[in-house]
Length: 161
Image (cartoon, rainbow, N blue to C red; front, side, top):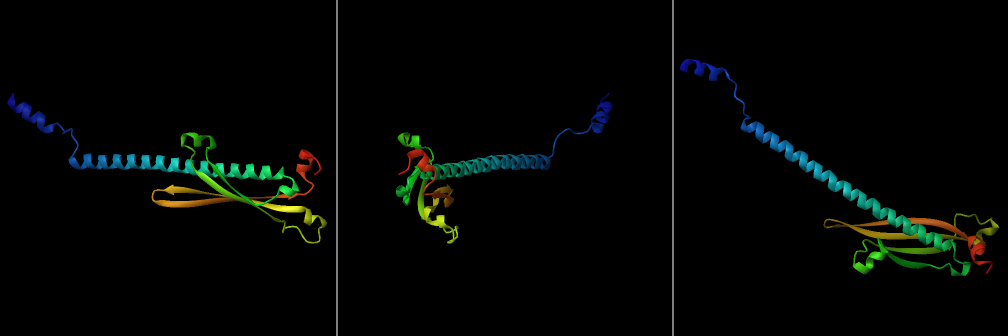
């Protein structure tokens, strides 16, 4: 009976992993986990960047739409500061600071032969903001231009002044 058991154990395969297989599996799982967390980090970074750029576009639209309602005599150059969340300044969570300028110039893209050139202004709104990527500081900017006529939309809103 003893001889039967020896024969039985010799023909039975071993059911265990080698040390090399375990180390390779741990390395693969570690790399997959690291890749997963890196993709989450980069995804959140892209979302944050797009959110900042969208807010900059909203600020530019707000300023250019407000300029269109100004009377001709009110068209002047000015600077401004806006926060990502203006209501968050109360709690110290306003987010990114956007600084910008609005400049009023003669519309150079209209030919001198056109009689209405003196009644047109080119408005350029520019906004700047800073992102911090680790120890690196990245300054972004966006610009928007529009034209305003002396006898334009503001006369319908405020009357002829």
